[in-house]
Amino acid sequence: MNDSVSNVDNAVTVRNVNKTYGDVEALRDMSLDFPRGQLTSLLGPSGCGKTTLLKIIAGLLPATSGEVSVNDKPVTGPGPDRAFVFQDFALLPWANVLRNVAFGLELRGVDKSEREAIAETYIGNVGLSGFEKSYPHELSGGMRQRVGLARALSVDAEVLLMDEPFSAVDEQTRRKFQEDLLNLVKNENKTFIFVTHSIEEAVYVSDQVALLLARPSRVSEVIRPEGFRHKDVNSIRRDSEYLDIVDRIWASLRTYVE
Amino acid sequence: MRYRPLLLKFLSAFLVFGAWEIAGRIPVSFAFPTFIESMAAFWTLLVNGTMFVAYAETLKPLIIGVLISAFLGIGIGLGIGLSRKFDWLVSPIFIVMQTAPLAALIPLLVMVYGIGLTSKVFVVCIMAMPVIVLNTSGAVRNTPESIIEMGRAFLGTKLEIILKIILPAASPIIFAGLRLGVSAGFIGAILAELKITPTGVGDIITYSRSIADYPSMYAAIMSIILLAVIFLDVLERLENYLFKGSQQGYVTE
Image (tube, rainbow over all chains, first blue to last red; front, top):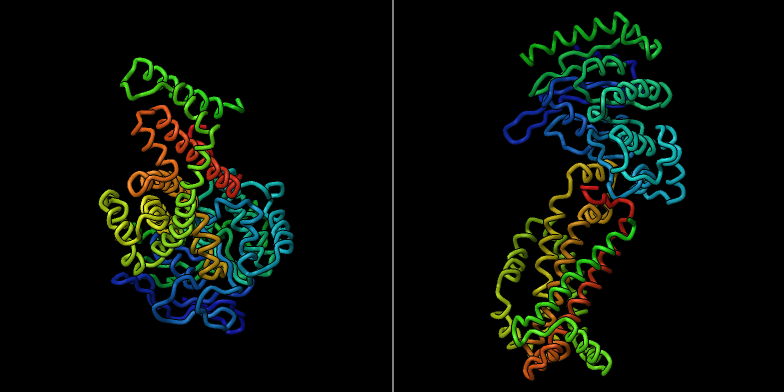
């Protein structure tokens, strides 16, 4: 059931959103709240519309009907309050890391010296110091995604939208990223909306997991993992509540793949 | 070896000229001079100033035509790539320009524009523009969707997306089109001089042929090839300068 508690401050609200592409109904009557300062995952099988919903929130796609609000203001297009991390990194191949990370600021008209200084800070934060002058084709997949993340962080938007950001990297890097993401959520005062199709990943990183059904997509359940959020990053995967929730979710989703 | 590309170029030139020399000595035909004879004629033309006077003439339609073709061609190609209506309206012109035989179009041109500089510039443009336009439009249409979306997500205006994302993404293919187009433009400049009125280098070719001075004829042809090669090299350096660091090198390296 959708848990809209009235005393929780929601950075993003989605109400009765429908999205149709010609004959195909991608989203039907989708309603969901995204609490401020927390990480909400959109979890569901492939093709269930989670990326569509994310892009509607980002303002990259228009909803066919319904309302999406960020900070109580309706979404009409992309805005400075939201930043996007792409699944395939979407880096400019002809620009070096510094320019790529500073690109969001460049499009906002920030001065060169200022934006390069900001970019250098975030490049350090994601662990890519020393690679400012490298080009994307010289970097590994994991490094490229860190560039994408640094770019999204450097525009200092309140809402960070992440579209399966870790699916294009190897398993070890992915696990490291998941740990880093937990620290990021703790340290940054932002609202994160995270699309994934990995159950373990969703339960590991999220404050709130929204289970989306297959097309036409609605929210079937919202799960709030409580007990292990404060635990050390290494102990979470063995926590019994974590394992229970993962099994529970798989039991729900299983019916859609069988 | 650091100088391997240069060495390979010299080797390749040496092979071609060597073959030419041998062919000239056999001889393949009485009208086919040896490489050395042609180089001697080249030197003579250079020293007595004929070459320079000729190029002063030929370079006019060549440079004007190439500049117009490059800038206008990229601009129109951009428009075609971005707008379906513009594509529908304008593409056919260039497809016709590409495929119609020049020999058929030239009399038409001469009728309308006479036998002066204008017609020759037109011939250069007809030869050079289509491939530049069609390459540019194809590259623009094939810009990866995700970086355009990224530009929109980070609040880029339409103009910024075109200038900072679409054009740089399309550059490798645009430059390839420029190389092909500019080479064709050079051919066009000579063709114009051969078919409309003999001036400049085209005149050297026609005149030498008419007095059976084949070494001079081939010398003139060589000179235009040399100029084209130099120009293409400059173009390549320009591309490397603009996109240094992001060139990925060869697949086999």
